Amino acid sequence: MAHGEHLHPATVAVTFGRPPRVQGGPVNPPLVLSSTYVSQGVPGPELLYTRSGTETWAPFEEALGRLEGAVHPAVVFGSGMAAVAAALSLVPDGGVLVVPRHAYQVSLGYADDLAKKHGVEVRRVDIADTDQVVAALEPAGSSRRPAAKRGDSWGEGGADVALLESPTNPMLEVADLPALLAAARERGVRTVVDNTFATPLGQNPLALGADVVLHSVTKYLAGHSDVVLGACVTNDPSLDAELRAYRTLHGSIAGPFEVWLALRGLRTLHLRVERAQANAAVLATRLAEHPAVAEVRHPSLPSDPGHARAARQMRGFGAIIGMRPVGGTAAADAVVAALRLWVPATSLGGVESSLERRRRFTTESPTVPEDLLRMSVGVEDVEDLWADLDQALRSVR
Ligand code: PLP
Image (tube, rainbow, N blue to C red; front, side, top):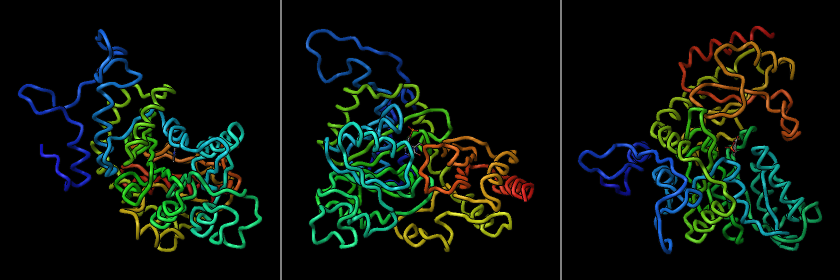
């Protein structure tokens, strides 16, 4: 296979991370279950011990790195949170970290932990408000920091790292990634973009200048709700080495079997995402007109605040919908209970459609509406998904 630069993502997903073509050789990388490798004398660059590397990681890392348009293979971790922790190790003790006010709640919890244990100043911003994010990157005395933001609760120094998430979990706010990544680069602020919702098919933040892109591989990349994994990708050789060293030192490694399954899932990423996005756009449009629905958020809707930005910078609008039924929290819980096809469960990005009321977690941001249902649209027949939603919404009116 000629691994040229010009291959489309669908082809990359299918063809990268294959063993060399040899007569009688396997088409798929073998799953190797061994914690240690035969070795004697001074260890060389070859495989030694599975905490520092195994041949079952490399094919997945190669394919995901290529999908993100990176010069390096991805670095796979034992969970998305392990990838978040590795990427946020870029924040120095006592440093400044900018985060979205709405983002995956455990990532925000991790930022709070850095504040508590490492004296990090965490600046929470509305990621859709570009001026506010840029102001949070600046030191207090900067002429670029808008007057309205001087003297606020932020400290004096400029930011060290910005964690960007777009679209955000669970509010689906869309950040102006090209503008924010350029602004951060200009100011010497390192950037970490959580690309879980968009997937590498939707956007490639490294091409816009992001330092690190991270994924909860658990979601769309693996795609079948059967593994928990994470990954980071970077174009910077020293960051790549730092992330690999972090993984070995912290032991935040992935099991070979999980990574093997994730590569198997990745082979159909484009098919699954295409179908899920198409389903989501149809459902969002219908929900927006449903008498039992108070509010719908999906960037595909022309009325959505993130629509124009998403249309400019993303390929597709993703497959997560935010929906608030008429009747508040009780109605939201009743809709979840009345559904027969949709699975009431946390997580997202599986082939099966699932949903949950996010504020059932007491740790979810208090500015997320109590009655917001986060819906992960799967790849089932859209008419069956709609019929189920419609009956559930009507049953609680
Ligand atoms: N980032 C986002 C946007 C997520 O939704 C999640 C999990 O829900 C994570 C990171 C953490 O990933 P994991 O659950 O694989 O640790």
